[in-house]
Amino acid sequence: MIEYLSGQSLEEVLTDELIIVDFFATWCGPCQIIGEELAELKDIKIIKIDVDSHPEIAKQHGVMSIPTIEIYKNKELKTKFIGLKSLDEIQEIISKI
Image 1 (tube, rainbow, N blue to C red):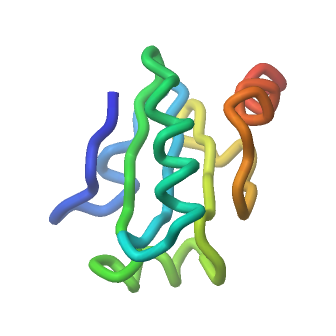
Image 2: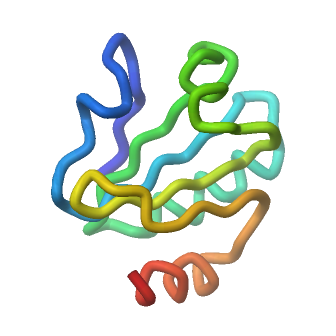
């Protein structure tokens, strides 16, 4: 399930479930590729944050390069990675949480 962050803050949309936060930009090729990989994860909530539309949130989260992926569980940041990963690599990261 993919949602795009609009007017709310990230903290308002975090829940106890596993949530992947994808910091991206529409002009970023690797962001588009990893977005397609994340879309394959059907049972996981994915929140996409456009860094051009929400620069203040990106800054709060220390996003310096995109794509940046944060993974939360129980409203707590469990891991973060930067750059392109394959679906298998993403699933391996999730399995360790």
